[in-house]
Length: 580
Ligand code: ADP
Image (cartoon, rainbow, N blue to C red; front, side, top):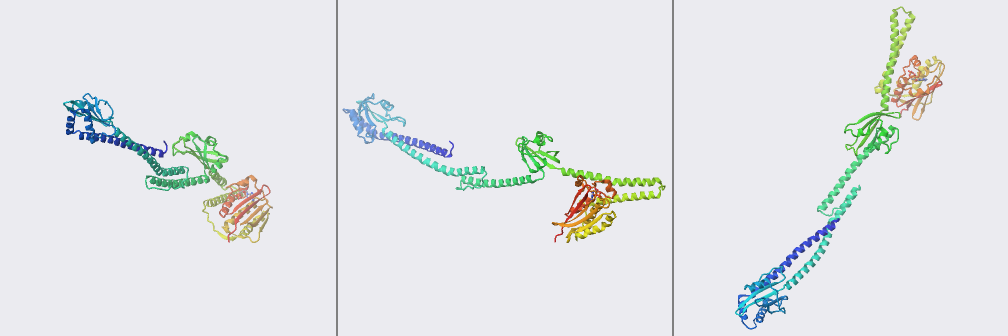
């Protein structure tokens, strides 16, 4: 029986049945008992001592049995006209001598036996099928027994009537109770149905519906609690969803790569950064071993206790990757492994550059130092025996090398200040054309000395720029000096200044030795020189272009070098035009 409605009906039916059975049996029993006590009351009332004396007198008369019978029947209390009640006059042995009805024999009863022994027999019980009274009438003529027998016809009919009434009311009661049960069920079940529907909706993730509270009883409280529970759930879920969105946005846009694996080693999550870093496609079919099998053991990782993780480095394509791997749930079955990938290519490259820089700087400083030492030793060993010309020559070499070291140290200091942002710039607004022509004027004698054809072209109305004029002029000067240095005497050097969009630029073009294509990308590295001997010979430190690049960076400007080996070089410096 699954419906509450049927259960309620059943309970009510059982209740009414039990009630009616109990009430019915009390009623029927009561009626029976009342009838019996009424019968014996009538009998004791009738068979008084007087009446018995009269009976004894009558017993001596002729035709005594019939006379006795009539005398008794004349007593209205005997109720002889009640159906099923008869009067008999018996002899000592119980044979019928006279009877109110047609019967000529009666069966022997306990009361009859009592009477035969000379006492009044008047015992009965509710359960027996009849009630009787046997009175002995003793006289000189012998003993007659007056016997009144009621076969309970009347009480049986009455009990039947009562039973019918009980059954009728039972039927009516049942009908009423079924209707009531249905109504009650309706009252209880309607809100329960609403609650069931509500829980189903909540389970399917729909929190929009609020159930109407129709009563103040327990069901009303339950409905109200349900409403507040679903509201709390809604806001909690919204929070969770919000957190999830935050996390997935973070996951999507973070620079570190993340790949998550389930306990079988299959991919469950990955972000675009991971795809980029691993230089391969990832999909749910890819297994841990395929991606990281060479670096770590999956089951050993799964068994790692919680805050512990495993870190290892690997290479993917041209990248250096640092991997952090850790299990993400204590329960191995629904847990898995999270791998966070950190791209350390740049870090490694920077470390490498730094190491190279230190090595280069030491080497650059050691060369002049060695020279200074050996020349100084030679002079010392000669003890003044050196020809004056040679002596002076050695001294000037020593001074030259010391100057070189000073230049290198000065450049290094400049670079280090630029790197750390400690280089102070005195920013002012100045006409770009004036700065370029200043440089031109300053170096034109040197250029002519080398027999170069040195020209300056300035576009009309060149704008102003904001910047450290002295340093920017120094940068342009450096580039022009390079053009003079790396162009064989009698070459062509041209300076052109013009605007382009929001920038103003100066281009220094020469038809000198040019730069091999493979060296072009490395020109801005510190100490990088295409031809070390030539650079050193001309007093270069290999730091000029790096310094130029740094200074232009700080001015939001740019420097580009285009060159064809053996034909010449174009260096373009551009700066943003000063805003009005
Ligand atoms: P350096 O002090 O050696 O000149 P730079 O940083 O100024 O150092 O230049 C780096 C290198 O770039 C030079 O050693 C040289 O090989 C090359 N270079 C620069 N300018 C030119 C140019 N105009 N023509 C050819 N090579 C050049």
